[in-house]
Image 1 (cartoon, rainbow, N blue to C red):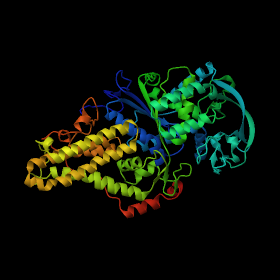
Image 2 (cartoon, rainbow, N blue to C red; image 1 turned 180 degrees about the vertical axis):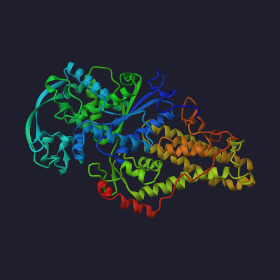
Image 3 (tube, rainbow, N blue to C red; image 1 turned 60 degrees about the vertical axis):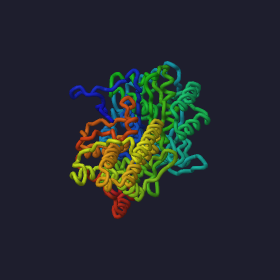
Image 4 (cartoon, rainbow, N blue to C red; image 1 turned 90 degrees about the vertical axis):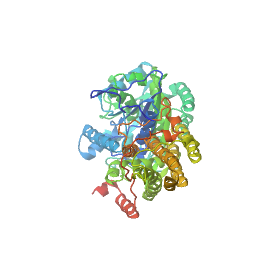
Amino acid sequence: MGDRKEDIRGEEEGCQKIPKLPIPGKRNILITSALPYVNNVPHLGNIIGCVLSADVFSRYCRLRGYNVIYICGTDEYGTATETKAMEENCTPQEICDKYHAIHKEVYNWFNISFDEFGRTSTPQHTEVCQDIFKKLMENNWLSENTIQQFYCDNCKRFLADRLVEGTCPFPNCNYDSARGDQCEKCCEMLNSTELKDPRCKVCRKTPQIRDTNHLFLELPLLKDKLEEYINAMSVAGSWSQNAIQATHAWLTGGLKPRCITRDLKWGVPVPHEKFKDKVFYVWFDAPIGYISITSCYTPDWEKWWKNPENVELYQFMGKDNVPFHTVMFPSTLLGTGESWTLMKSISVTEYLNYEAGKFSKSKGTGVFGNDAKGTNIPPEVWRYYLLTNRPEVSDTLFTWTDLQAKLNTELLNNLGNFINRVLSFIVKPPGQGYGSIIPDAQGAESHLLTKTLAEKVGNYVEQYVEAMEKVKLKQALKIGMSISGEGNAYLQESQFWKLYKQDQASCSVVMRTSVGLVYLLASLLEPFMPSFSLKVLKQLNLPPDSTLSLSDEAGDLEKARKPWEVLPDGHKIGTPEPLFKEMKDEDVAFFQMKFSGRQADRAE
């Protein structure tokens, strides 16, 4: 299983990486995750909500031999950046440079395998945004209108939606810290002027309403094109239920023209004489960032983005981002009249909550990406816990006691224990074991216990692939871990330690089958815990650049039904070491105390 060799960032020619392009006849998959906003450090809820989930699917696609690229980057324009720059007494560009580097470092530590991690404050982004805008203007999908917007006399400027806070106007909510664009509690989209008791987020004073001219995308005129796309693709792409519900809530509520410009300085300039002192609204330009970042990856970006016949677009995000990706972004692209690669499949997460409350960047609540590194808990444990706890259909809860239970029970006692038992026995000297040499397994197909195991494993691998193809990541991870449980049961039932003395041939079958399962687990779990798989390869004495594979072309799924044939007899394995470390009660108490309260207070 796995004699291919592929660089995840494209084939290399000398030191120059050659970008991957769609290949006729192959399955070409373009993956994006919601661009994380650059004004803060990402917390664990952000990480599982977009970049980590997309990374798991990207790695799975590579294992399957699909031609895939994973695009992401930092969303850098807009009010939040201007506000953060004011707080830190620097320019918006300096804020972007600082936090882009922090995001990149955090994602590197979590082993996120982007093909390109870019940013939206680039000349390429401006060019692509303005080009799309001009086509919308030419096709008469834009209109001008005067709107009322809050103006702060104290700050001497119009306030963008995110700079206004107040009480949510929806009677079943009444959240008192709702933002002017969206209520964080009920997720309803808002106009800032709808808020009750509005206040300027910067100076806390009550703003006044003034008239200002803006450009609008005429969503009602695009409704027929949009609904045709949604009705077809939500079925073809098996959209998650939460994505369908959020989208239909917008459609049934009646589409309204959506403002695409803002009275700001930090953003993509509007190429229109009448609006030259304005910039594009961040939710007009941010999704276009997927395209512009791809244009930084390859000058042939249109082969990915204007190729709907040959490219499948998968997008990952949190639930609050859904309408922008299922309504706003496709409407923008449809309005150009060009043949764009529109989203086929959308994977949406609910919220990951922290202990007794919510993760919050603005309030500094919870565990942040840079905090995780400082705990000395390895990235594979963090990835595993976040993915087993992925909020796919409802909100889930991060607790330190649950992390401890999953680490000690599932990773240490199940997965780590199985691998260590197998490899530790093989490395024992002859007379006690196999002197590190994988034995032959003659008669494996007629060995009843092994044949039963192989059938179960083959079925599990099929179920794993089926779940991953539907982007049911949590289910696939559970299936992969079930194989480890079957391996432990197989070892116990075989009583290999007795067989070694009583029936050497049967013991050899059990051990070669078991070491094949070890390699299979490294393959199946690589999308979820890549650093774990690298450690297993090292202990198997296989080179770290061995490409794990679940390719149909290589027959890997069929090989899983004969695990005794996965690794060759005569191969010398490496030195087994414990793969996971126990988390003790005192560790839990320490982390609970350390990560209570606000991040800023903890730093002080």
